[in-house]
Structures are given as C-alpha cells and as structure tokens.
Image (tube, rainbow, N blue to C red; front, side):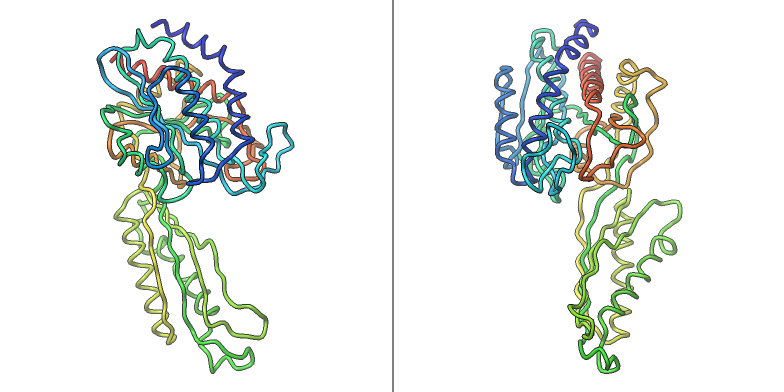
Length: 388
C-alpha cells in the first residue's frame, strides 16, 4: 500500500475525527455505566463492513478486520469518562451534569475509528488482520481490560499497540519507552478503632485522630527508609475522615490512599511494612484496626521490538527530533493487562502546551490535531508490523 496516500486519506478524515471526538465529549458515560457509547462505536464499525462483537467483557466492543493471511495486530482505545463537572467554555462542553471526558478517551476513540476507516477501505491489500479493541472502564479498578481479555478480545493477536493523548506534553511530540512506562496502582483503606469520649477528658479515651495522624507520619518513612532507594515507589494518603464535632474525641478514623510502584515485589514489601507499623502503633495505644490492601492495575511494561517499531513510525510522522524517551509515570493504566498477554507498546502523543490543564481537571482539553498524529503513527506501526 502507498503509505503517503493513506496518510493523505487520514488528513482528509480529520474534520470527521474532530466531529466524532466532540460528539463523544458532549455525551460522556461513566465507567461500567457505558450504554450509548458502545452502541455508537459498534454502529460506526458496522458501517465500515468490519466484523463486530459487542458486550465483550460486558460493555466492550471489538471489531475484526480480515485482510490477506498473515499476522494479527490489535489496536486499543478506551471510552469511559470521569465524575467531574466540565468547566470549559466551549461549544462541545459536556451535556451531562457532573460527568466529562477529562482524560482524552473521547479522542482515543475518534482516533481508532479513523484508523479503522482507512484500513477498511484497503482491506484487499492488507497483509494480515487488525483487531480494534474499544474498551470500557479504564478509569475504575478492576477496569475493563481483564474482562475483555477473558472474553477473547486477544484471541489470535500477535501484537498490540495503544496510545494516550497527553495534555502535559507539547503538541507535535511523541514519547516512547521500552520497559516500565506506567506504574502499578494499588489502593488501601485503614480504619483505626479507638475509644471516644469528652474533649475535656482525653485521658479516658483512645484518640483515633491523634493515632491516625501519627500513623500517617510513620507510613511516610516506608519509601524513604525501607524501600531500596534504587527502586521507585510512592505511598500517598488521599483521605482522612474522623470525628463530627469540636468537643468530642473521635472513636474512629478512616484513611485511604494509594501505592504506586514498578515491581510487584516492591508493592508487596510496602503492604507488609504498612501493616507492621499499623499493628505496632495500634497495639501500643490499646486500639484495634482493619486494614485492606487491594492490588490494582499492574505496571505497564513495553516490549522492545514493538516500541522501536512505533518509534520509527512516529519519526516518519513528526520527525526524529520530536520523538523522545518518555519519563516513566506513576499513573496507572490497565493496558498493562494486554502487555502481559502479548508483545506490544503503549506510547504518548503530545496533545497540549505549557499552560494546558492536567488530566482529570475540570478544564481539561486536548489539542485536537494530536488525534491525527496518533492515527498516523498507529496506522504506520500496524502496516510495518504486518509487513515485517
């Protein structure tokens, strides 16, 4: 296939990509509550004559495009939104109160649909097969990837590629990396059970606020003093709730947070150290506790050959000077589950500028031209892999 002609066809599709993205932006749906979005995606794929399976892993959509006998590449995009009020002053602002696409998943979907359209037009020349994985519920553990994999979305797949439109990377740049690129994202909850009482008589109580605050302080020493300094990890307390009024000593404190790491052994060590500290401090104060450590998404670990292939494809799109070695992120992504099953890579397409709002912000938005860069890179990487 003539690569230049295909890229020109993608460029001609750009207004349609923008329209699709803006439609989805106006009609967001939360994780595990997606109903109309998968219907829309399935309808688009069916119009292209692509074999479509719906309800994959309950809410996912999979399209299978068959070309000539050969290898099979999967391309993945997510389509869930977040429980955030859209504060942007734009014509495509979310029409659903308290829900918005604040992470670019609408752009991911529009990008993949455009790639599907181009490849479907040239299926007779396609040297292999392409699977379009449209995934629900990336934002909320346990996510949609595991269920879709269990339901067969990777059956027969030889490699997988995915991208994230990234608002804090300048438009026109593409970030790649072999090895760990996004962290495992675990969650924990802790309830400290003390003994409440009058605010004037602390000696008759076991103060859950003081004990909880002390535990928070001690937990912060795990990463700095217990984990190998050559290993990367984060332990964050995200919430602390206790008490109801000013003159009562609380009998209970509820805390929750997250642990991020790139190695399962490090996360397991942190969980063990956390419970050791919590147990010792509660016992010394005469309190009890309940502690739950929930394993979330594993780390996203890119494979070398597929990463190099995407790097070369991106260089053809934006120039070698604009393709960089991305710094690993402590953010989580359930694309990790796909990479545990088949070789592949997850890369970042710059969709912002220095003053762009971060992901999950009420005024988050993307430079829409990034969709075209992402689509071109995915298209070239797919063809290069199938023809290699």
